[in-house]
Length: 263
Image 1 (cartoon, rainbow, N blue to C red):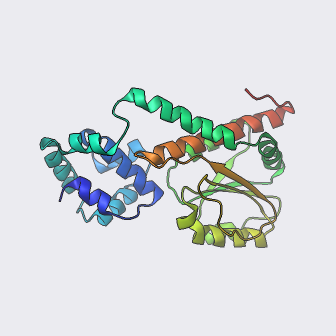
Image 2: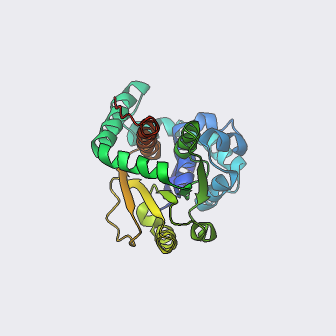
């Protein structure tokens, strides 16, 4: 069985594991020359994420993966797979897909809702960002941007019930998920804790999600962002989330100056 077949035989990867999988499938020729540490750094994921994904593939370590990838490459396996499995054969074909995701995200934006959320962020005693994903580039960029307007973001693992229970009325909890259905048990418990604390919540999830029965909270700012069902889908989903968070940041900047400007 080829490495590609082992990778695709797995029925479910976590969002972080999917980033690793997408990278390996898109760049097998680079992956064979990289260490697990360098792949983790390049993909903004943890080493644990890589080894958890390899365990699901039933591949014993990064060296075995590289050996099997090299074997497949020498046999021209990935050249055939790329022709069959993807509609992005060169960089030029990425542009319309990129623009499509941006347009989808813009269509989902509500300026008044963004302004309302930004006003709440301004009033909040503390702002917390909950996520199941380690080293999420979109969240990291948003946190860095918010620091520029002196609104620090404190990041918390969605599974940290004790930290969720420590939030208070007047705080704002921002929860991001790439898969509301699979993450729902954790989100439901987190929302229950936040409801008891009367903490306002901002939930961000993919466009196809959002129909789950969510527990009642003090106040919910609900956002959807675009999701693409195709090769490198996680990259495009992250792109949409990044655009949404960038727009929210611009709105926060406008709130600090009491002057709303959108371009």
